[in-house]
Image (cartoon, rainbow, N blue to C red):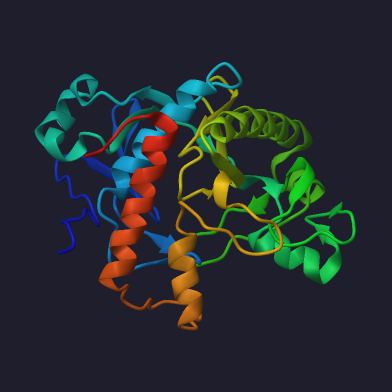
Length: 299
């Protein structure tokens, strides 16, 4: 039996700002309340069913990484303790517990900051076609899932729901957001990736790549926002099963992507229903990786 999931929050007494692919955002005074639902998007399409406890996994692991990297760059978290939320939120305390955070309001930079340490996904596809990756010339003869000589910063556009992000060069990103901002984002993203991937490796997990988001706070400073190094925004591979030259076993939503590819999903709405086994195993993978990395169990 599939556990109950939260597909969408509905807080009548709070001001809804937006519903993203996974998160619902409310304005509460000077802050935003971000609620991580159990929705899952694959190929930028939101699935019909949710993944049990996925929102709690995302919230727990993001909070862990935000704390681990707060000396590299300021992040948007005010608190994840529901008891410290504004009074208007407390009537929803039971639902918010474990899957929400109170954050600073920022102006979002419309660029996804992707860092790649291994050749996989769209990066592998680009390399096969051109021998390059988002403007970077890579060595010839690399194979799927191979470790890159150095992690690289490969920005993409930030698409609306239903549209697809597109890889762009660093120079194109600078034209969109400005040279100084992109240089700051690149330095922060690479520094975060290096620290966190080294930590994860010590726990037996390879972080192959990840996606970060940044904003500008009220003081005009760059700030890290949204989620950080979650199974939604990253590829997590078990080190003991890693072998270059093929696709990898994974703790992230690649399991769902692989299923959708196997049934020839056209990557456009409406999505197919996910089998109960796919939902259950995906939930197990998410909960396993959060326990390995944070040593916190959701059970």
